Amino acid sequence: MHLLLATVPAIAGVLPTLLFVGMVLAGVLGAMTMISGNKAYDEIGRGGLSMHQSSGGSQESLDDEPVPVGVSARELEIRQMLQARNARIVRQGGEPLDIEAELSRLTGASGAVDSP
Image (cartoon, rainbow, N blue to C red):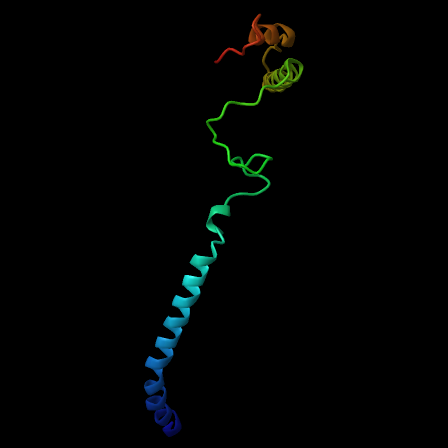
């Protein structure tokens, strides 16, 4: 116990020096990080599944116009949505939809989809 009490004043004398050296080192490392321009924080949230990054690497806004899709691909996706909806309705005991009539109603003559 006496040995522990004898070392406390020795540590207490070195503590301000250690704190000062630690603060100076932290400041130097912080300044070097800022100067290096790593831009690590700019990369947060950007990855393969990010919606904000296009394939070219430039950032695009969510408000950008959608990329035009071919009419056949568009109709295929609408048909797939209608088939899934029809399967759900039948599973719940309802009457099945006429998918072709619904597709023609949604696409219309101009090819635009009506909003619900």
